[in-house]
Amino acid sequence: MKPRVAITGAGGFLGTALTRALIASGVDVHALARRPISLPGIAWQPYELGGPLPESSFFAQVDAVVHLAFSMESSGQAMEARNVAAARELHAAVRRAGRPFVFVSSMSAHAGAASSYGRAKWAIEQSLDPAVDTIVRPGLIVGPGGVYARMLAALRRAPVVPVFYGGTQLIQPSGIDDDVAALQRILNQSLTGTFNLGSLQPISIRELYSRMLAAARLKRPLVPLPGNLTVRVLRATELLGLPLPLTAENLLGQKHLRVFETAASFARLGLTPTPLDQLPWVLPPSTA
Ligand SMILES: NC(=O)c1ccc[n+]([C@@H]2O[C@H](COP(=O)([O-])OP(=O)(O)OC[C@H]3O[C@@H](n4cnc5c(N)ncnc54)[C@H](OP(=O)(O)O)[C@@H]3O)[C@@H](O)[C@H]2O)c1
Image (tube, rainbow, N blue to C red; front, side):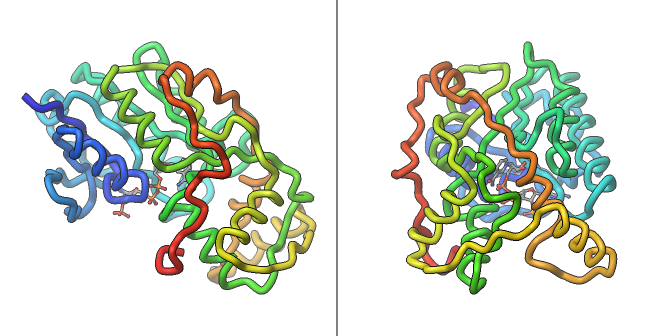
């Protein structure tokens, strides 16, 4: 019988890439999603974060559950509480069925995280047991979707690039293909524990923007702005409900970036990360 994997967030950027790769390798993928997903060969099980869970018989029939879905529809503590509660409920149901649970966290997750996103990911990690569960922490995923594509689209629109906190904070981009390959190995080999997936060498936010501008063939001045003051202004503006291209949450995430040791994770997976210069920085204008 073919292996079966259930994936929340299967219709998102990473979820689509992972689903395609798994189906191509002969795995049956069941999307746990709020609407059907138009990928050939994928089965659909309705699922909303925090909503009713599938019957226990569903979990008993899959070989693993990969939890990718994360809701950014609310903000602050509401966002944190919703995502943490939903992940804990899902995890409990998967463990009751005795199935492996693979949680896709983030390099924003650490004890000193200040953004609601980072705090939620960290809180979810804390309720897992690395002896039996799997935690995957990608860095900024470079590829045609997700945060990276949104950042590149913002760079195309903006006349200047605002740089906060000096732009010297370090970040570890990862290639979408490396993240997919890592998740496939984890599933194939039932690996547990924590895997940090990002470039071996961190780069500064300034260097990240320079690489993105070069990839998009854009010339934009980098303009330093005070981070803490901007967070306060953004918070006040957000209270007014105005739509903004940048949120206080984004800036807090940038302020508290942390460098993770990634070589051991890639070595354990038997993978060599794509060198920074060869990441898919260049996207067609239609995707960014
Ligand atoms: N992209 C990155 O750079 C990056 C870096 C580190 C970690 N990650 C993590 O990797 C995971 C996938 O990221 P991504 O870039 O693929 O994000 P994405 O494209 O935004 O996908 C998010 C997925 O979550 C689903 N979702 C959101 N709210 C939901 C809800 N209330 N109920 C059920 N499903 C819901 C979305 O479903 P709909 O299609 O229905 O909206 C979508 O399929 C996330 O957990 C993210 O935090 C991403």
